[in-house]
Image (cartoon, rainbow, N blue to C red; front, side, top):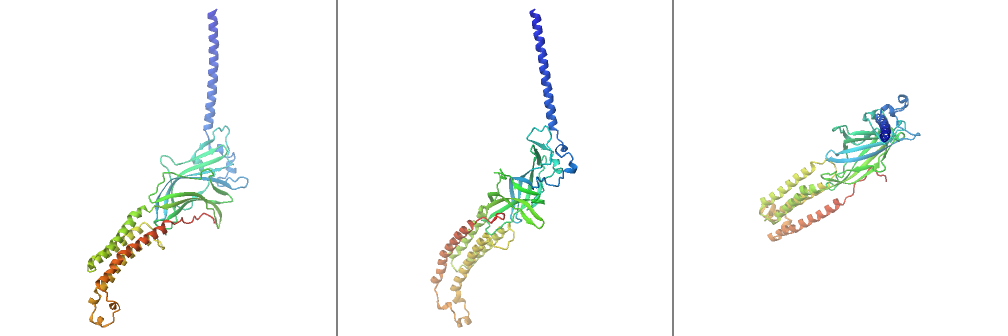
Length: 405
């Protein structure tokens, strides 16, 4: 009897285990089918049923006759290749655009917050026609895979992200170079849609992000802001957004390559004040060599800059140094004329009146000019350096072209 009882219990347990295993396998297969059904998404599943007649990919998704709104976000990965001669710079960036297209359909059984769509579908649905207004050249990144993707959210919002390398123009003002501050910007504008159909807006949470790895050789990004650059044309008003970068130049490079050498050259020209006036070749050679060296420095300093019609701070510096060296030559000419004037006068000249001969200065009185120059030239040059540095070092930024008064 016990054996019969245990056999019956084991038979019931095996039957229950078989039923539970069968139910588990059925549920698992249903879940896999549902998951596979959700993973397969076709373009026709999100477009309207009669999309050939009701969906126009060239028409913005206006809702209740209001213009479509596209939110933009820019992530600056790198800023480099600042070319003062061409007034351009290069930027590597991520550009994100998000908008809502209420004409799209969300398939039944959609469970995820968003789905990654085939990027080729971007040509079959409407997307913003944004352009970089001040771009001179642009490259689409294709390393390993094309660097862009398209997301579709459950609330019919789309987000398109693309990585670009753009060469942009930047109107620079070199009046205070190399103590200048520049304002460069990225202007993103709609190509064909006016503000009655399309409006660009910066993302509310994080419209512009600068990578901390951005490092420039001579410039420093001190501020980055977002502005609205919407402008009226003869054909209508077109929406536009601008990312504005305020840059301050670090004059350290020119400090060692131009400022210090030019100061030493000017000081070298003052050595002639301690050389006797009779050593004419030595004093003339010293002054002429200093002039030629400063002229060469001026040419080298202008090589990386465009030919502009206004003067720059570096021009004021070098030209003043040249004037000081030239005045040291003039000083020697005056001293030499006073010493050798009576000796070199011809018989005819001696018969004519001589204005400076009335003073008849002796050698010691004439040498007082050299002694006075030993003090006058250094003090004057030191005052010039103080005034120059205070005037050009405390300059403000040039005016932001997008700020309204």
